[in-house]
Image (cartoon, rainbow, N blue to C red; front, side, top):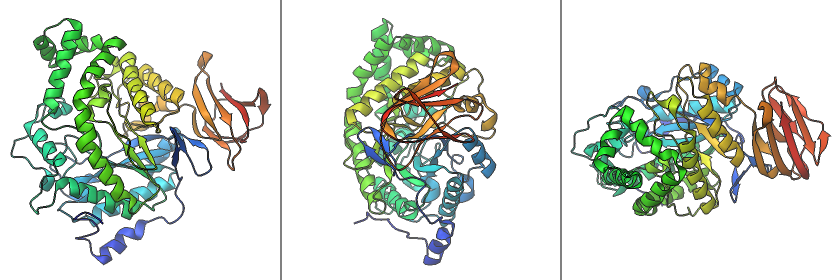
Length: 503
């Protein structure tokens, strides 16, 4: 039975018909399932997604549906395809979708349907992303005003994300969400959020572009967040022989903060910090966060039994704090970590540390291995228009290739195709491999290689290789014929040890 507020209350039958006018009928772009830690497509091939985030956040306080419409065009989507990207994590804004309790905006649903049609036409598979920053549209983006239950005044911080740690308004609003406190109509706001996912899966679950659902971007504690940050400061101080007051003061100063972050260039110190803080987050991950995912999965499955459900870690997992995530009782779910070095969203981004980000994603790998499910990195990068980020981008792409992880780069913005970040993403990559145990990465001399144990199936292995680069396919050491369609390279399936070499 659906919770209160489910369905299309506030949307008439005629409006439902109009909202469905954009539906593209037919098979999904792909149908994914999980086989242990491997994503598997409808042909039995190991599938790896390489995508980007498209998120129209709207300005703080925005209420009109038009305020939440992204400015990307068909030409922009073609440019994404031209650098080999095949999937999108598409932001769904709660404030735009449900402007009043239990009433869903036909205008915004129409717009989402149009985007799904465009993305399907561009050959992109889509994960619908319940995006938020600072919980609410009143503070950043996310929850509508009616679901923002706080009497506190919000004050923005110089670095926007610092408000997660310092804003009583954000803390109180998040506490109310996790407690499922009732809005003015008497229905719990978390219950309403789950009902929205039930509606979205009913509305879009059969769209051929949609392959899954990312329920909530970076779940964050409320009033516990500043205490957790304080604990991080104290552990860093203890491990480095400093006074906590000095470490805290340095984190408030951009130049001094870089010096403090240099302490985490020691992977053992970084890992010890994570191990000390992780138990403090266990109750949050295993309690209200797990309850949210369990309820959302149940609501989604009423309409869509097949779509992947992405389970994120909490906000503090982004910096390498291991997440105590219980398994989701569902047949098709994946772990979706985010990871950024702590210079993200600052002018120091070109100084980001490969060592620190490697530790962050190694901790994510340990979580994924413990859960025994595929890893799909929901966010990484955030390079914007910065120059000098090639080294840091390449280091992460090598990590992802080596583990055959799917990923979504953060994020598209106007002019993205001309950025250094876009240039680094234009590299060889596997899309679907008729086999298992895929390994890939750059080789000596600037080449690229992949290896896998082949299987018989009814579809070829598929790689995206820039057309100017030469390709060689070997099975058990013997060179094979291959088929090339511009940047798409197709390789015959079959048993044996497969090797792909790219100049």
